Picture 1 (cartoon, helix red, strand yellow):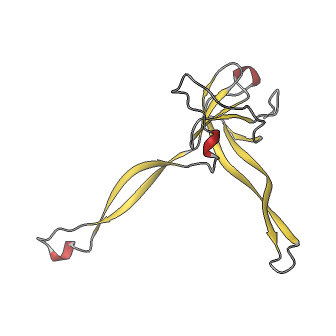
Picture 2 (cartoon, rainbow, N blue to C red; picture 1 turned 90 degrees about the vertical axis):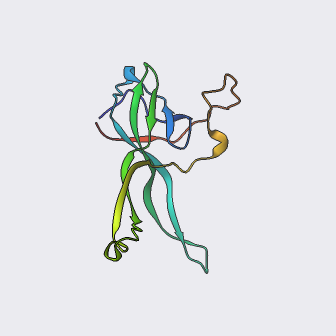
Length: 141
């Protein structure tokens, strides 16, 4: 999909929420998914010579558009289902002592961010410098 501009992170709200520099006027729609491009990748160096042996391409994270405005959009990291196994301790039945029950809930991916870049929207005061952010790559609707 082609957008009217290069889509980038404009502000970081938390470990799970960002604002991007494109909105509904640019073709952004709720539910669209983007990868955060890692332009440096993971560089592999020789431990003896420190020379670069190669580079693994990758992404810094994944974002889903949750709300659009005309010129910007709110995005979040994916939320996924998580299942935890908990040992049952029913003393009345020896056979059940080693059984496992499942406790379910949801957990959200967290981005590896610089904490100082978090923009607190609950405060009326801002002390942030706007910096050119990471570019995004469109995945799907």
